[in-house]
Length: 122
Image 1 (cartoon, rainbow, N blue to C red):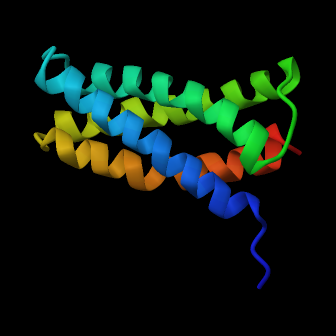
Image 2: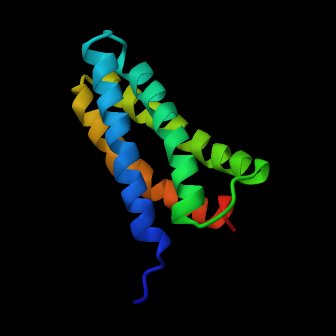
């Protein structure tokens, strides 16, 4: 099976964006005492800005444009809603905020790749 170059590159960008997300979420939760849903939502936005630039130029070797930015935002918005929903669901069921962060880290990147591959950079 020949793996497209975009997959490992997307993974590297994703790992970096995830690190940004986790560090910011933990900072907002532990230092600023934000609710985990808000902390995850804001951390997602910051990581997403990095992700657009890196994925557009490196992972998918595309040019930054208004069209790709809009499509990236559409896919990212859906991922953002899922991020907040997952965190909220875990908290509402009495789960620890680290479970919410872990689920976000495991689920959102592969779903985002698929969305960007079939929509953003088609």
